[in-house]
Image (cartoon, rainbow, N blue to C red; front, top):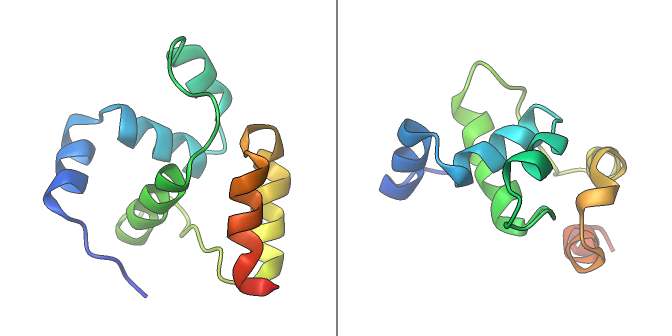
Length: 98
């Protein structure tokens, strides 16, 4: 299912703002970059970060599509980012599969 990019999404992409850079770091498997860039921001991945990364990946040829629609894909994502995912978010992501 393709999510439509809204005006805020397009603005974030064109300005390459913090929201975009956080989503990009997920897609590039480089969350350590966020830790360096955001000395006063949140160093944990949020649901909003994941949702925006999924939207961007649907419209970009640069990134593989971030799909978390199967348990195996979700587990792979959790393993890749386990140090940066709060336990409550992991539980929320797993809910559809329980």
